[in-house]
Every structure is written in structure tokens, then in C-alpha cells.
Image (cartoon, rainbow, N blue to C red; front, side):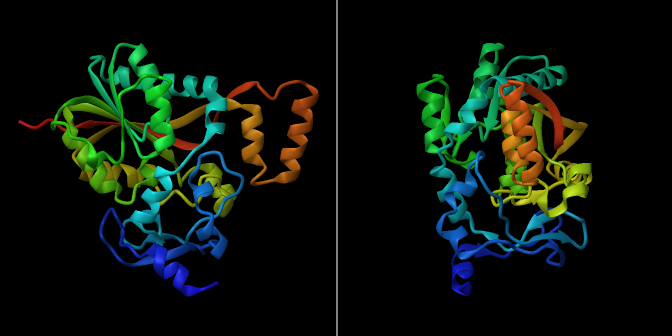
Length: 311
């Protein structure tokens, strides 16, 4: 492997939570030269293999992150080009997952005002939000996903980063970040910006892989959420610390459940244990259960936080 490949595309960073430069290595990088030539597939949700940069843990605050990692320009270029038709094959299950999230938001903020979805992808959650009486706005880097949201669902979705949005501070009653915070190059900065866009007492909903989950403890490097496009791996403790530093009060941290077809779960299981996946594949085919939707816990957490009141 040529060192210049890494020099061109990777950057070294300090801890995003506390600024410490000291870390211990948890997992060595598995990136190869081919991974840099064919990186686009590794930035899609539905892909066929996992690989990841070096995963480290801060020696001061215990935040787990990738270092060195893909540089920001390289990341944005890949996300802008993402196309993922397979994502749309799980519409029924994804809508069930999104509905649980929306009901949780409404439990803590019953006022159906303006909601911003950061990293909205094809807009499935936004569509549900609109149907339930909210005014919905989304932002998403993938051109393909934005076109689907605009053309198929007639949603108000802007292409780019949150920083590109031209809107007043304190203009949203709620902000959702579905499977987003682990992708961000500077989550602390983004969460601070989100806080500015929320009204006093506004609600932030996010879900993210839990590095302290039982699945991560068992599978370690083969935990299915340790992958190329994830830059940060939070625990309930580190996500709470970060949110508190960004002017939030954490109201609830709990298990996050996904609803997806058995066929999809078998696809993801194949990355960890081919034999077990093949057994499930045969059994589900014989019993005609591949399209059966399951709601399960797979090692993620849901966090609800409120913007602290300011006078």
C-alpha cells in the first residue's frame, strides 16, 4: 500500500469533545488502496462489505472516533454522489421506525410547528412529519436523495450541509437527526448550530450506534455499525457530555428499535456470520417469511434533548 494514498485523503484530528490529542488505538485500519479507489459504495447505507479506518479512544474523556480519517472534502464529495435504490425497498419498515420517533418528539413537544430534518436522505421521515401536521424542511448532501424527496414526495429539501441553510436562529420547534451524528466531521460544531436554530425549549431527536451496547461488546470490530462512513462512536455518557456542552438538557436516553424485513436483516448478518445467515436464508425462504417485518434492538440508542432556556 502506498503511503501517499493516505496522505492525500486522510487527516489527523484531536478529540471533538474535549480537544485532547492523546488516544489509545482500539482497532487498526482495514483500509486498502482499493478502498480509496472505490469509496463511493462504502458511503451508501445498503452496501455489501465493511471496512473502516483506525478507531481510537480519547485518553481524557473516552470519546471513540476514527483517527486519521477521510478529510472533509473527500467525505462531502462521496456523500453528494450517493445513490441507494435498495434503501427504498424497506419503505414499510422504515416508516414504522420513523413513526415511533415522531411520536417521541411529540411526547416532549406537543406543539406541531416547524421541524428540520438534518440528513433527511430521501425524505421518508419528512413526508410522515408533514402528514401529521408539522411544517417540514430537510437538508441532505446526496443529489439523488434530494431529487427523490423533491420530485416524488414534493418536499422542501435543500441540498448541502446544515451550514448552507439560510434561516433565522430560533426558527424551529424540533430538529431530527436520524443516523447522522456519527457521520459528522465536527459533531460538536453542528450540534451547537442546531441549538441556535431551535426555539427556546425546542426538542432535538437523534439516534446513533451505542458503542457501549451489548452487541458492540460481543462483536467488537465486527459490530455492524463500525464502518467507513462512521467517524464517531458515542456511548450514553459521551453523547450526554457533548450535548450538555452544546447547551442542551438531555431528557431521555433509551434503546432504539428498528423495523426492517427479515430479508434485510439476513443481508446484514451475512457480513458477520455467513453460515448463520445462510441458515436463516434457507429457513425464511421455505417458510415464505423474507418479507416479514421485524422490530428489533440492534445496538443503537435514541436521545431526546431540549434546548436550554435563555432569557
